[in-house]
Length: 420
Length: 116
Ligand SMILES: Cc1cc2nc3c(=O)[nH]c(=O)nc-3n(C[C@H](O)[C@H](O)[C@H](O)COP(=O)(O)OP(=O)(O)OC[C@H]3O[C@@H](n4cnc5c(N)ncnc54)[C@H](O)[C@@H]3O)c2cc1C
Ligand code: SF4
Image (tube, rainbow over the protein chains, first blue to last red):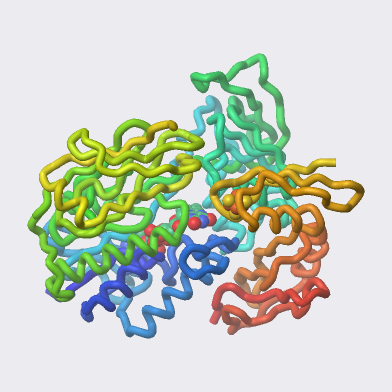
């Protein structure tokens, strides 16, 4: 069987970022496997700008951001294979893949980085009775139709869900001549970035109806309209508010889910809160030598953070392989558990296995103004920081330095939100 | 007259209040930092946006493109009509100009993806 030091699954921004970082940490024998006909991942269909503000201090479109990383790969001569689908990974890191030239082949990897990204939540999210006429798409599918295939899925559109992809598609379809009637959001607040609400909806006079949902879809072969209604605090539709809205297309923008079928095959334990792997500060899963980064690990709203995380995983894999000469191995030396507490939905990483500077990413459960982010070790406050505003749609961080962590070995750290 | 502008420069999303007398700005309040003032001023006088869209490629396929500078938001539909009339020819590379001086103010339409 062919042996490769580091096999990376997925050639999106996470896979490419991890490959470059691992190379720069000394790994030379790297192979990136990508099922699509080009590198770049989902960014290739995200043609709008706003990528890379943190990282490059300029606003790039998705394909331009991806190209920056692809060039880095080429400059280092890092090997990759396109049109190659990974079918299986075993816990001892045998990767089975397939393409039309080589058929099915196996590689024994020294370390593996999972970077398969995420997919949209399936249509099931739409809880309406009755038949399903044509004209219902997820926002990401519509994005692919328009931006890659050059085909407009409809003329009169209602969007359910105010996640960023839905907001971006509202503007995209308006600019292309469609009429976007409205965006409906079940929750009393939008999950999208303020910037997108302003530039995609307000700019184009598209109403955003919070606490609203679709209760019925009309039309036999093709969508002809929807009945919408306001919902109460328990998110039940108030039928007295029901009204009919004409449309030929419904876009569903109802969130993303990490794509972890392969991780499960490799017996990688998952966190039910993130739907991604449980990892340590280097992004190593509970299976030694298997790392994860990007949207397969937890859903990111900014690709800049994907790149940052990919670099952590890339360097982590180099350290695991013993190539970068760092003091890091499969052995847990610190035994620190990280857990979400009041007002926090999840933390990442979920454990810290070595005493070193660590950034913990987390998401809050609700929108708050003026809060304190409090870190406790076995119930005792070790760090506290004010934040002017937190929201579930925006990832938050706390930095824990090695000095602080040295006193925490064997303990459980919790992160919580306190109103001030 | 007062206009409320939500600053989108950072996640704070300050609600900035611009007070106008005729088309003269008399005060700007509610911003937490100077970037908010500059943004609100531009929003009230001549808001600008970057256009991102696609054009067809001769022989099939589509090519993502953008205006290499922000252009006047009020004229976007006019620019879109102009953009819909151009086609790209392979090979085309990131940064290649497809329309020079799209808005009469120096913004060009450029490719944002490679098509060999
Ligand atoms: C429809 C959609 C639109 C989005 N729009 C935005 C946006 O506007 N702005 C933003 O900041 N973020 C957006 N995101 C989030 C975006 O996905 C991330 O910012 C970033 O692209 C994630 O990078 P990644 O490398 O983790 O995943 P991806 O970019 O999804 O890359 C994963 C790669 O892995 C490959 N792969 C998966 N399984 C296999 C396998 N078994 N074998 C081989 N290869 C495999 C895929 O083909 C893909 O190329 C969007 C996500 C989706 C799904
Ligand atoms: S005014 Fe300053 S602090 Fe407020 S949103 Fe704008 S950039 Fe952010």
